[in-house]
Amino acid sequence: MTDKTNGCLYLIPVPIDQNAKESILLENHRKIVEHLDYFVVENEKTARFHLSALNLQKPINQLHFEVLDRSTIEAEITNYLRPLLEGFDIGLISESGCPAVADPGSKMVALAHQKNIKVIPMIGPSSIILALMASGLNGQQFKFHGYLPSEKEDRIKKIISIENESSKNHETQIFIETPYRNQHIFNDLISKLQDRTKLCIALDISSENEFILMKNIKDWKKETTPDLKNKPCVFLLQC
Image 1: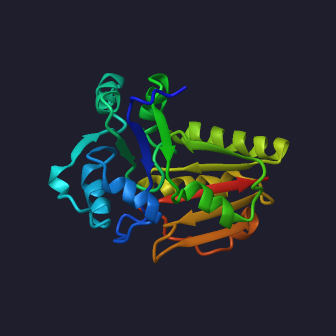
Image 2 (image 1 turned 120 degrees about the vertical axis):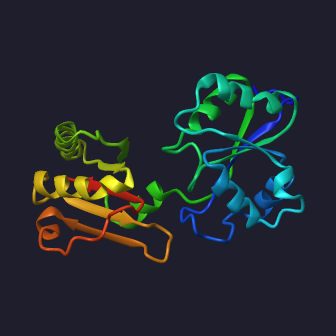
């Protein structure tokens, strides 16, 4: 059971499009955030930007921010929990979308559970789920792989492996990539996957430039290659 003397850890979603100037929070959630003084964020600049969109009654510079990114060690995260153990609530904010999903914030959530701290997720957009919804691929059975290997040889082995896994288990396979490597992974997918395999590209989800298209590999080879460079992208395949 959670300890009622502790604060609560609120998982606060933000728009996937980092240029969005409006909040996506429900009104009751916005009121909760308005009363928070402590935040653990992946990127302080973008967190401040999104909180400003809420028109908080208190000045942003009076809020306390701690940064939790991929380089943050567990000892630091443990220190970030201190306000919770003193009875104060904390908001956890990812750089984009929902915190703790394909995001280093999951480390803090795990530690909060170990300390019997109540974790409360707020409703918001996940690029992974939105891409699956729009793909037309199997939404009953799917697997998220996170990032594929950066080395080409290892990446190709992984691509072939997850295609075989999809065929065997009838699962949709979902993965993401560092934006500057998007084109490389797309080229590998087109050249190594079987013609009958279905591939969905979900690019710039929720932005003005959103692009979501699903085709089999045979037809992708005839399609004009979309501009994937330096844009957030979700890849989904099903064999």
